[in-house]
Image 1 (cartoon, rainbow, N blue to C red):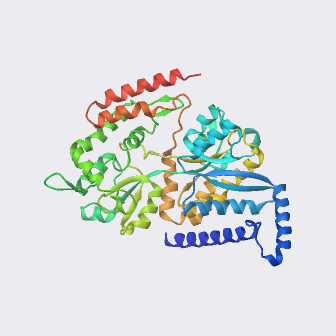
Image 2: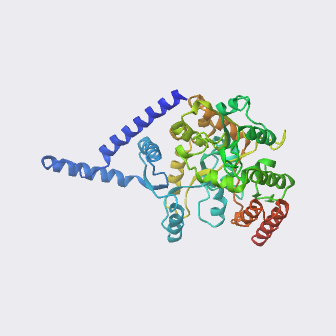
Image 3: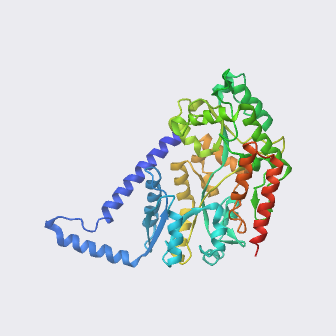
Length: 449
């Protein structure tokens, strides 16, 4: 881990230095003093002529942080330097604005050339003619072999590609080995089933005589989410292109299990416990007040940067619902795609290939600790030398990335209220999930083409 971090910081420093050099060389056409104004003017004109000869691409992302922006801009500058036909400009827009503005630009006939977009809704955009079919641009090239198969599927609509996967994520289990040891548990044996998870959590709990939670072993809604456990129970998404799978017997049992934790610990006690925490140093796991946490593997960066006890943290796949049902996990991520109506699709696709090829993907994964979509980059020996990164990549074998079906874009609005009613004690799990199943089936039937 330490070796990879040192390498990562060195690469980042080199990338920032390279970006500074590139900016100094070509980013200030008006540079110069009064004594060499003529020379500067000639150079500016020459640079403008060269720039005119290149196809100009506008690449939209929401990566504007002091960490991620230099990394994506280093990748862009490397691409610009790698050939003399295309020049890519990076445009940053806030996460809450980028896709709304993109759709407005698509409607106006003036979209960006390439954009980072949500991995789960590629087909939604394709069905609305909002992104570009890549089939003819790809031709006979074997582009799909560079990606994890589960991710390539997310890029398809009617079995044709409309995007290229860029990054993904996966949910894993973090646990505090020191707490395990103090509670008489084996610190090298994390819970492998839900039954073991519950038993270990009870041993880790520290509950005051008044019911106040001083330390919590685990609780599903605090660290994971009810929908994660419903998917984990049988490995099926709540809704996919084949239909709704909301009220399966295992999901009904799973929702009952999730509710049982709040019943045992007390909703008021849990609410009071949650209210005292936030993120980073104030995350309950990092603060030493939660023994087990299920989260995206990238949560490790918060542990690494803010936890005093990071050497005591273990990582493992999600527990199985029952022995043999599988360590089923879920993931999300982002793709790069060409908005419909973009003026330079051929050149845009060339840039997208660069973004998803080994060098750029390895650099992104190394500097951001993200799960990248490229299989070869993910398995690079330098990245794999980090045991946490390796565990995250290994966990992709258990991970499903659920796409939003074209005929059920708002299915969660029909499920969430029913689950909330269960967790509040107003409905029974079977009754609620049966109602949600019927509502989503009706939605899908109504929207069927």
